[in-house]
Image (cartoon, rainbow, N blue to C red; front, side, top):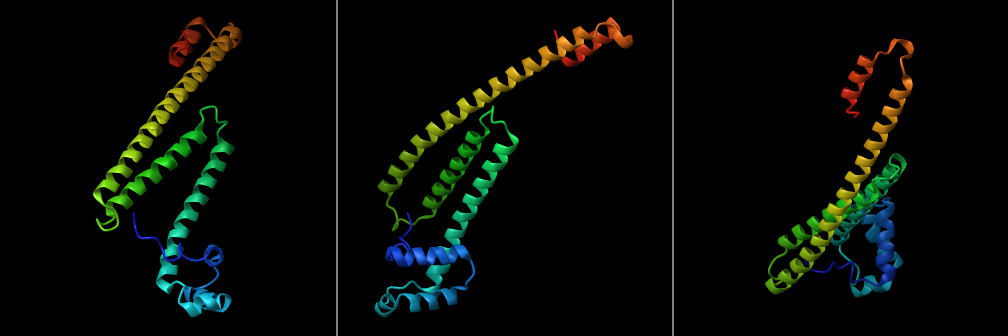
Length: 190
């Protein structure tokens, strides 16, 4: 993988301060660097504070993560609000999110240079990823099977209800047996 960020090498207090300010999004990078120099003069004197570009890169990475978390949370809320989750739609959304993250991680690893990750390490990471992807794929297949069973059961129940209503209709209101037969054929009611 890539070289560890200089932000990750800071004291937990300084790193937390940077993350909090970046998440708030109310300061420019220059203002944040200035505030770090004021808040942490010892680190500034020793040259342990990160550069403006390091904070910028870290901020972009943090923003991508926060955006992904916000999107996942919003998707989960929408799914929960709009799906009774009889079909386990939340698990489907979670599986898709994990698949996306694994795909992104593999792409990042492919972009890593030989200096950052040697071939043996790459093979080990890919092997672990392959096992996890296989497990995730099995889970996805089982979920799809479950969803298809739920859908089939719901369809069968609906057809039974429609058949019962059609049978109860009798010949009221001029509905003939030919009309009822045409409705049954159109709906697929046996």
